[in-house]
Image 1: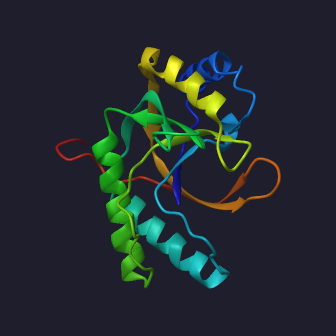
Image 2: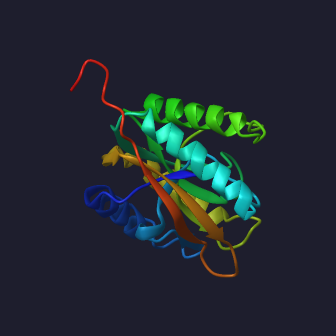
Image 3: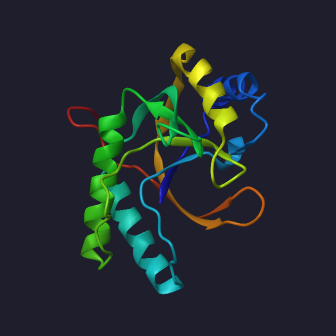
Length: 190
């Protein structure tokens, strides 16, 4: 379950970051149309459980207002040694995203899904090392470039999307199975 990232300005800024890091050839970049912020990952979701997850997303979305989320800065996982993932961080709106994730977890729990083992730490995955052991060259490139990266733009958060992820030898492909617009009015607003 995720929030899609499709703002043209954010994608353009991320493209510039990608270009700046293009010398780190051992990175596999996520395509713009596949960018999303994962709120809950399911390893395997049979169709009956997918229906329950969709119901949880619909209930969460019906009670959540739309908000803006700032994409800000770059980082990496793990923080030391060979890099395996390049990510963009979040600024304003991060607390609202975490609250949305908590509301989704409550709805999922009410439908029999187990609690997540780790707390939600939202980030936008931009690239993965081609070698599963990681890349020292990419780690050096990110370390040199990341301090110069500030705000990358603002993304409207207006829906939850249930994706099916197909992981193979190439880049992951995330296919939307359901879209659930956030429809609650802002407190104190219309």
